[in-house]
Image 1 (tube, rainbow, N blue to C red):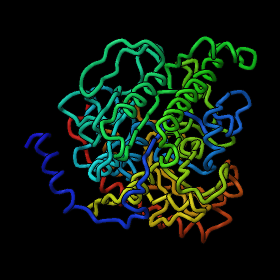
Image 2 (image 1 turned 90 degrees about the vertical axis):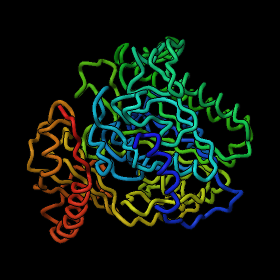
Image 3 (image 1 turned 120 degrees about the vertical axis):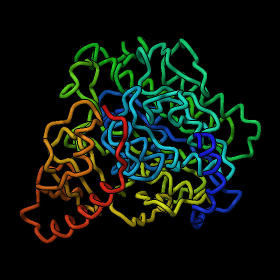
Image 4 (image 1 turned 135 degrees about the vertical axis):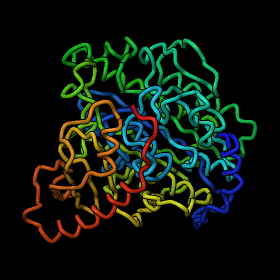
Length: 479
C-alpha cells in the first residue's frame, strides 16, 4: 500500500480509532488558532521577559492583552523533537524523533502519527503551515510525509533553516513546488504567506488553524540594517547587534500577523499561543556561528540541556473571548508544547486517538484562572544532552533529573546505529532533585536532603522512561 492509500485508509478509520473528548466550547464558538513558534529563542530574549536591550513591543503588547506564562516548556531541548511533540501531543521519543533531523536522513514524523492539524481539519478547520518544518529528512519528496500529509491544506516551508540565511532565502517550497529566490527576511516572508492565506480563504466563516514556525533567531542570523544600527551602542559587537535585531524583526512579523487578525475582525475569537522550540543557542557552545547571543535568563543551561535553560521558554497566551483572568496576568502554572493538541481538540470538539499514549493536557482552564489537570507529569529525554543528565521530569514544583549509563559526551553523527542501540537500552543512574518554586535556577540539589521525595519521583520517572523507551521505534537504514 503506497503512502497516499495509507493516508486515505487512515482518514476513513479516524473515527473508529478515536475517543471523543468532552468539548468545553459550543459548536459555533470554537476558536480560531494562531501558533507563533520561534527557533532557539531563549527564556530571557524578550523585553517582557526581562531582556535589558532587545525591543519586542508587539509581543509585550500581546502579553499585556493576554497571559504571560513564567513556567512554559518546550517538549524537547532540540528543534525537530520539540516540533514532533507540539504536533502530536506525545513526548517525541515515542514517535522516534530523537534528535534534530539532517537533510536526507531516514528519521521523520511517520504517517501513522496523528497531528493536531489533521484532527482540526477533520472537524472543519482550514489549516495552513508557514515557516520551518524540520520533521523529515527527505523534504518535498514522496519518500517521507510532508506538511500536507500531516493535515495542512496549505504549506510554505523549508526542511530546516532558511538558506543561505534569513535574508533573501532560496529554499522555500509551497505546496510541493519550489518557490525559488525570495527578496526579504524569512520571518517577514512567512508572515506575508500567513496573511495572504488568512485573507484569501474562500469561506471566512470556517474556523482556521494557522501554524507559523519562524526560523528566527536560529543561525545563520541576518537582520535588517536599520534594526541592527539601533543596537550598535548597546551591543558588545556587530554580531550581538545582529542577534538583538533578529529578535526584534521576528517581533515585527508577529505584530503584522496580529494586526491582520484585527483587520479581519477575528482577534477576539482567536486563540494565540506564542512560544519557542527550545532554549537559546549561545557562544558557550556554538562558536562556529558568531551571532548566537541568546539568553536563558536566570535558568541553568541552554539549548541541548535537560536543565531549565534548555526547555523553559517564553510563553504567551491570548484568547479574548474566553479570558476570565485580568489581561496582563502573569501565572506560574506549567504549560508545555505537548498541551497544544489536547487543548485544541477539546475546544474544537475534535476526537483524540485512544490507541496511543498522549502526554499533554488541556491548558484551556488557565484562561479561567483554574489549574490544569495532568494525568502524567511533564517528561523529557534527550540522549545527546550536553549536560550530564539525559532525562527529566517535573511533577508540581519538583523536578527530578537523571544521568544514564551511556557516554556523558554527546554522541556524534545524530541518530546512528550506535546511538540507536543506546537509546533503546540505556539505564538511568545518578539522580538530582530540585524544587523549582524556590530554586528555578537549579542551584541546590536536594537529592540527599529529601530521600522520600526522591524515591517517589524516581519510581514514576523510571516507569515513564521505560515505557517511552519501549515504544520508540528502531529506525532502519541508519548509517
